[in-house]
Every structure is written in C-alpha cells, then in structure tokens.
Amino acid sequence: MELITGLVPLPVFIKQEAMASCYKLRISSQWSQNGCGHTTIKCIMAQQIPESLFPSDRAIAKYYFDKNYSVHIPLREDWHNNNVSLNDDIVCFTDGSRLTQVGSSVSGVSIINSQEEHCYPLGYYCTVYQAEIYAILACAQLCRMRED
Image 1 (cartoon, rainbow, N blue to C red):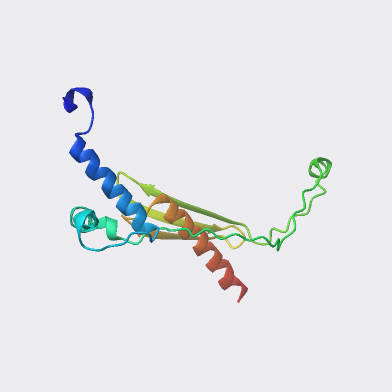
Image 2: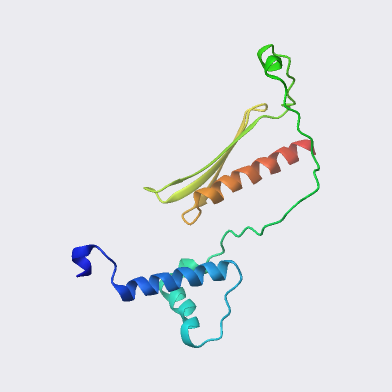
C-alpha cells in the first residue's frame, strides 16, 4: 500500500525519525547514553551512517548587551554628491562553494588591493556553509598577516 500512496513504510519512518532526533540531541550535547533500550540507536546509526560521528557545526548562543561600535549612516544627498568617505584600505572578496557533481568543496579569497588570490580545496565532506566560513576565516588570517 505504501508503494501506491508514495508513503514511507511506518517502521522505516520511525527509525528515520529516531535517528534524526538522536543526531540533533547529540549535536546539542543533550544525548545521554546508558546502553540499553532506545539509546542503542546511536550505535546502530554509527554502524549504518558513519558520517553521523563526524564533528559538526554547533553554534552556542551568546548574547552581548554592550555596544562596542558606532554606526554612522550618511544622508542620501551625501551619497549622491560623493561626499562620503569610506575607509576601504583593504578590499577582500570571499567565496565558498560545493560542486555536487564532482563531490568536492572549495574556498576562495581575493584581496583586491594587493591582487592576491588564494584557493583552498576542502574535500568531500565539507558543506557550503563550512566552505563560506573557512573563506572568511582565511581572509581574516591573511589580512592579519599583512599587518605584521
């Protein structure tokens, strides 16, 4: 019947949801393993999906209530009259991407002022988000090295 209606069989759906919940709880450090009952799903998932044991992105929420910066938005007339001075001593572009057909990811950094271009191959398991973040971090490191 599931084939006709296009639904996933109930036992498969239940295992899928259990594994997804286990993974989400493990990533957020809320999974507790006691080795019996339903907590053995982590061991089953590790055998069937070894990628689930790879390190993962995890953002811990931090709240900053102190304002350590100031914002200045010029008037529209200043923009039209070219009366806006921008502090653009260093101009950088970053990009991270994943090619699904090839199965690899790459990050790139281009520093316009010094005409530098850097390319970082990141392999198969890297996501687009990780590639983007890596490019930003690499750009910051390159700019920091230029200051020294």
